[in-house]
Length: 255
Image (cartoon, rainbow, N blue to C red; front, side, top):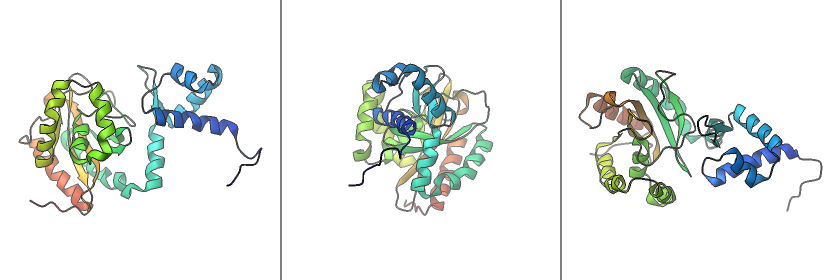
């Protein structure tokens, strides 16, 4: 077994990564006091660690709640390590195209152990609050969450579903299975105001040649601009774009 010689490691780096590891294992947003209690790092030092990790994008701090989650920079590192079939780079032009066509914010989300996470965002209005941004984990009843619930194997999402069910309206959950059937049939998902009042979303899957779900593209905007059925003009456009994107990854749709 390989051992580490004394004086050959940087303790402060180990502590900083320990904080990152803690947030990853907890799988939920943590406040400063939560992290301090769990790590026993002095408040003055912990402030410096959190401030540094936040500045470089390793962590993200929600200004309203003051809680910390894993940041977008970690997503970049993870995707670089796994090479994730260069999905984000390849779909970026489509995200821009959808943004121009719909005049709404467009998101790309991929699956993590803690649920679907936004990894790419193309904004229309910098001042428009959609209730989510890079690094945000999306709930199961969001348009994005429903697509993952519809297409990812139950074995992989069981724990996520169980956690989501603990704080989700039971009446809406009763409708989820039926919604998933429609999503699998029509290839598109809808959600009315899942995160922010007056803001709704529509989403569609991206598949690869193995028929594996690579991620989900979501259009977010004011509710009166976002469709709630597949017959809407924007819905038809998105379904066609969805087929085109998945085809670029070798996916063949069988009717």
